[in-house]
Length: 141
Image 1: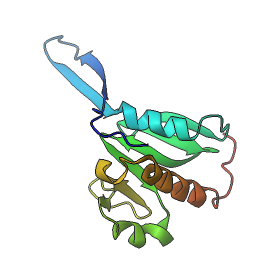
Image 2: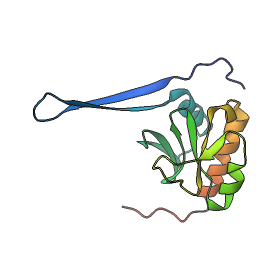
Image 3: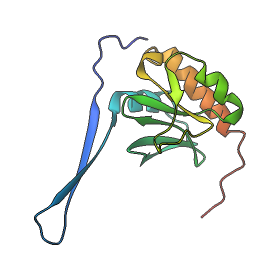
């Protein structure tokens, strides 16, 4: 399946807050590709281990509580693990995940051009799912 010519929809969820004087306002907006998020939901439909949570200015998908992929702007945030990190970075349209200003080892951004075809998206989703399945269970809070 190919989404050629399909425009990505972006969710702009804004929160407006006023300082005590009421004269200054701060606008913070979160934006992410809703179409990409829905494609991920479609792949994991019916899997009770997969949940989602808004974070990082986008949406993250968790497998049994472990974040494994997410959507930030139009890119896929992919948790590949430290042992797969260098290999992932050698792929076309993949870059370091550095939203904090410092690269996060084990995480990469996969740009939209690399995941336009469903099979390519599924490749990344399964790679990340396979990694988090190796992690110890999350402890109950």
